[in-house]
Image 1 (cartoon, one colour):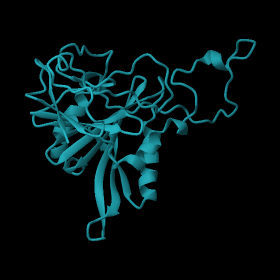
Image 2 (cartoon, helix red, strand yellow):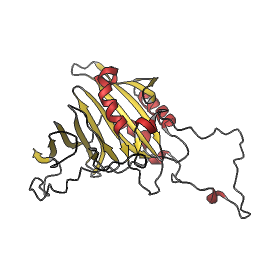
Image 3 (spheres, rainbow, N blue to C red):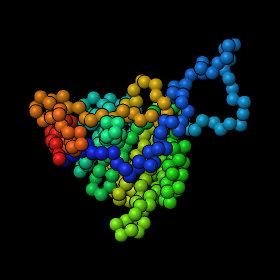
Image 4 (tube, rainbow, N blue to C red):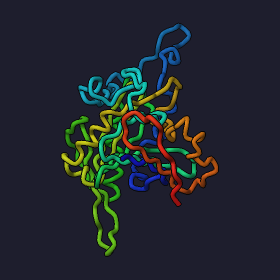
Length: 280
């Protein structure tokens, strides 16, 4: 049984999320054109500093196109059992609970977290340039943010490429400092960037992370055709069930600060659709 829960935005990675603020990037959109830099003679400006670093290569598993995460142009998601969350299509695995995190101030879904036992992975997708990757830069910023807060951050090679394994300090119930482990992975796709943050046992145990890695690999990112600034979050939405309202399962006047929980028998095709109940 899978449970989809609408809850408040998680504070666990709130500080780190600032590294994905579009304001930190150049203001140009992700589809810059050479014509924008051309002078009146039709030639294109060339940077004066010939020693400037080349654009960062895209960081992704070498088998991404075959084994995922996929772009929506690479697979047919029609009736394939994936849950439609707007920018993300996610396929569940046995025993998985999916929680949708909502930024109440912006009234926007900002992340999807898959939970299996005492392990979890948070998924978020962002706009990215077409020809260059941003994971290397973002990874460095995340590490700097965590180190500044007194934590640790180590780069390791994982199934999705270069990952960041971190420990974030916080005050324990007895006043002592405790460190919460987290494992950051990033995938540069075609005009999008997918971030996966493993927590709980999955942050330190590869066996515990394996089924969640399967979830990440099954993700399909729906980028859309709109021009967006690099690092701008792709829009996530609550799952749409066309027959839910007609069945009387959904209360359109439900309180915004109540959790909305959706139960399904499995995550293979949604034959009847989730049954939505309000939890107060």
